[in-house]
Image (cartoon, rainbow, N blue to C red):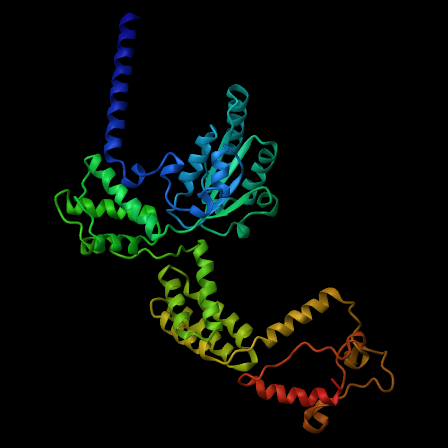
Amino acid sequence: MAEGTKIVKKSSGGGDLFKARLEENLERTQALATRMRPSKLEDFAGQDHLLGEGRPLRKIHDSGILASMVFWGPPGIGKTTLARIIARRAGAHFEEYSAVTSKKEDIVRVVAESEDRLSAHDKRTVIFVDEFHRFNKAQQDAFLPHLESGLLTLIGATTENPYFVLNPALRSRLSIFRFNRLDAAAMTRLALHAAETARAAALPMPPAIPQSALDELLLYSNGDARVMLNLLELAARVAGSDGELSADLVRETAGMRQLDYQRLGTDRFDMVSAFIKSMRGSDPDAALHWMTRLLAGGEAPEFISRRMVIFAAEDIGCAAPNAINVAASVVRAVEFVGMPEARIPLAFCCVYLSTCPKSNAAYSALKLAEADVHDKPLGPVPLHLRNYDFTDEKESGDEYKYPHDFPGHHTAADYFPEEMSGTVYYSPTDQGNEAAIARRLESWRAKKNL
């Protein structure tokens, strides 16, 4: 027994030694971005609109308040780090939960452990959900009662607009804070501080970072601190502690510029909006810029072509009725040729639609008609408009007047239900082809005293 006990102790000691060496090696190989992760608010970079004196998140942090929140913004700006800082300040346990891989039993476990923690140690639990936009309805519903009871405090981080992905019941119980990309000043301070940290830890880092190299770091990282720190670390390793960290080296190390667009991220909606608004504003140059950024960011060309079909109907309409044919043809062309060649018909269509005369009169008329159908009493179909073959109610004077039997192929008949006689939805503009439509319509409506 004693011998066996000695063996166990020796094994345990060996295990402790192995664990200590592992931790030492992990500490030495820790990424610069991980080393730079702050543990207190004073070291946190950026988000002054939320964390400046008197700002909402600053007050939450300083008072040690625990509140369920969503941090919404681009990647690499400190959303996870700030959640940790707030939990630590409030003395709460920080539990990470995966919206992608976790299952119902994980929720049951988290709830049970939180109950034990609160009853045994009077310690509350902050559950942090990264990629919050992937939080499905079942997961949202499972957490909801525990948020209401106060057992759990939920902090989510997402790159997508939470108003689009959260069910109203959960959204109404969360405060949503919009995070911004880090500006040049914050990124510069972070890069210089990271360089000092690396040198102090005896990690490869040239003695100075020239302004030109710093400018390249900022250009390629585009407000993403994680990208910048990883790029700085790799470039410094290539240069060595005695080498030169030049702008060319940063550029070559980066390989390809990081664009401010994620396939399913918030910036997607911002850039799609900018693309559509540029076409609507008849600026082909800006429209091409945003479309190219969408493609470079990984947007499906089919999505862009479909958006242009909608645009042709909504914003050009009768002013240039052939626009929708062009856009629909480009949809087929994109599907037929695929990328990268699909960008060529997309560019053609983008320029064509941008330079067409514009009118949203048909779309505006649709919204007026929809409002009437939704809000007003709906009368029956007038007798003279009903199907002759199946209507026995017609009397003298109810006959349908066939327009082609009249001069100009038009007759001043009333086609509305009686209660809505004289209603006007469509008001054509003086743009493009719609100017001719306006003249015809004015003549026809005059015959009906409209």
